[in-house]
Length: 314
Image (cartoon, rainbow, N blue to C red; front, side, top):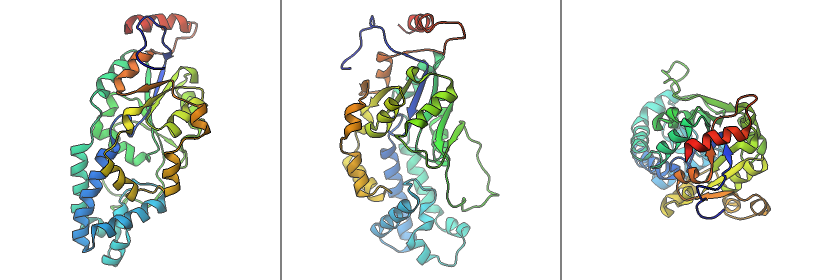
């Protein structure tokens, strides 16, 4: 579907909006890579190693856990094991606190929603449409990120896989900040593009797949998954535009192996069979293509509901 849909055209009705998070609602690459750079710079000085060595160590940890956002990965690096061999995890955390503080400071500066996301989501929410997030980021990571972004005013919940790994270095007695948004936990290995994940979310929301819209930046994961699940799918093309230097650093840090990166950048049969219904060059454009509204009440036809929401949206 190219260009804008005329306001007189009948648009698909959406009762549940399911949103990928990273690079769909905010630029994950633009905040995460600078934050890691800052952490590595400080940590390398504390440990007396080169930044290149520490980045390589971090990639090993990320690949071990299959998670580029593995919490406190720095503590598990070879450089830390060698430099601080007799220290407990708590003591290592204390020693490296300036590095973690540098990460958090840069994250605060760079992590923000795309400019049109908040107003668009609040407008859609006002129609009664249900809005949830879905991510492969672990529950502990996305809970913190959602709080920082204020997403609790826009989303009713986020679906995310459970984190499985070493406990927090400060132990079970640490003070925990209450989650700002409900995180509905998926199995640890719940991975896109498995359509059963999308179907499960639709079932929990009580909305037929045909009236669910999935928005994501990844064609091979988000769009293929949504279409295989029988959902509407909008490709957030704007989320694929990254600074080449930041992207290069991310690949060098990530748990992705070269074959996986190559596969993600290639096209295949699924991409030919499952194409997005629309392509977005800004998030707010989603309102040009769809009519949003609440699930019809029992006994109320979808057509009647469509007329009500469409009338209020034009």
